[in-house]
Length: 162
Length: 144
Image 1 (cartoon, rainbow over the protein chains, first blue to last red):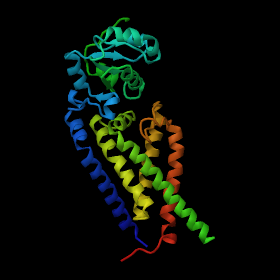
Image 2: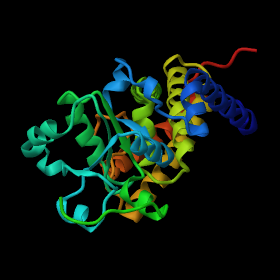
Image 3: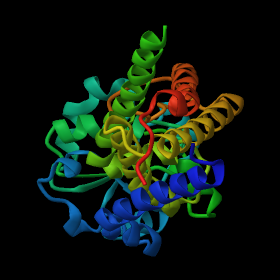
Image 4: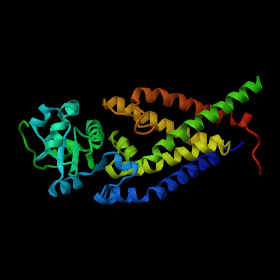
């Protein structure tokens, strides 16, 4: 009945309408993402989304590190000793249960944490973030570019075991 | 014969629509988490992951809702078919690059491997093709 060009046009219109609604609902998030202002400290509130680790960009990781946030390395100890973000605390996801008490003694729950692991393909920092939120940490960020993006940007890397 | 064909046509339509309404709603409820999952595919510049995560769930919701509501079936099925084809290509690229990620198809807690997602997308693509092709035979004639 309806010829293909008409159907195609309607399909494109449906896609455009859906995308417009999505952008209208999420315009602040998208705007923040494109201007690099994502997950500003004020965004951490008691909303359900805030109970998940919040993604941060490299630029913001640098700012956070300069203002006293604690980098947390979710990779295993061997990778940590080969190179990590300056001042990072090693808390491998696999050892999180055993080491969490010690970590809590070392780092106050009100500190901002920046978790990272091996870049975008690596879910460990996100999973560790969920555990840390459950353990009471209020401001948990995940740097999804992880150690590779930090190193490749030519930023300082610390070596040595924990 | 015609009756069972009509029944299966409507089942395909409702199933396809329901799956996409569900998938879209789950992701629309937590756009930042979905953005993280899109980023895990490592295909887009960082900010574009947020653009996709903000828009894709609503496109899925709208097209799925049209199928459920028995409106604009052919364009909605075409759109979902094209989207599914795109998902399949993206998932193949994930397998080819050996990325170990969660597909993110149904939000943050679904936990589906790329291979499982690929199988599911092939089934959904078949549903979309079925709805598209059977539409003219079983749908009531369009109004003026």
